[in-house]
Image (cartoon, rainbow, N blue to C red; front, side):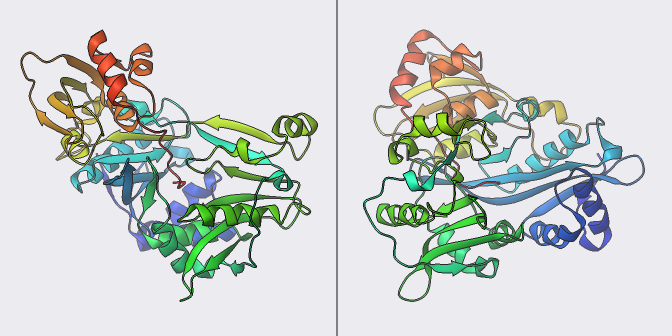
Length: 406
């Protein structure tokens, strides 16, 4: 496979062309793409005549309950017009996945443009994320917001430092390069924020938004460390209730926004088919796959009883074995222990029940995206009834929430 790492001086114009052809940037925004690419590494591959495919990867962590695991995040899987339907994106994504695995990550995540495409590389969907549109005047808050400070894309460094310290729940993803936050903050020309500072001038909690100059705004993300800070941000959003007809945002982790709004059903009915329609929609765009079962399990702690079983794992990455070097995936037999001290080691143990799963299914089981019985119903895992029942009892995981778009 003729892929290589991106070289800015050599490949910049080709990358600009690809991203422009697929509609992700326009010519006046090309310099923003250059800064985005500084936040990670990019593999590129030529089509018949010129560069036609690129895949971007950056690094960070994924939180599993209270443990942070090293993680890679694949983004910017792009193919030019002359390179489509040649398998370039699949092969280059497989190579990027292998490179991340060789760099020591336990798990890799990406945002899928369509269900099923990345399943062929062993990725499985995480849980649903709720996307909301609501009238901010309908927020139920019992506190008043203090006067905030303005934030602009020039505040990207301190905004990133605050982002790294935010409240993280199960499934939270953290992209450690500060250039990611810079790119997030400056991607469009109408992004801005409001927030609060500590006594020494550091940012503590804030919201960052798209537009908001007219009758609605989209909250790109909320950043907070405590419950009190979250409540103050809600109060801050409510202050715009006399200007904005609606606010769009992803539901914050651990929160059910419907319980924080007045008359949600009435609002949906009255605004149906209007330009400011209120809604609550769910979709699962994020996908993950474990790259090293031993590493993922060694960093996992499940409170309660201990359960041991054999795992027979299938990994479709073997279909790309000719395109990648040094990493052959996770296929094989393991002895798995789940409990306060989890582990996995190569080889089966006589006398234990066996769970058969693709790496896609096992990742979703480990992450808690779907219950064990739910995965068995969809055919992603197979196990004796007694083992499924024990897994249901022990793997009572919270709903994983990424809390960071990538």
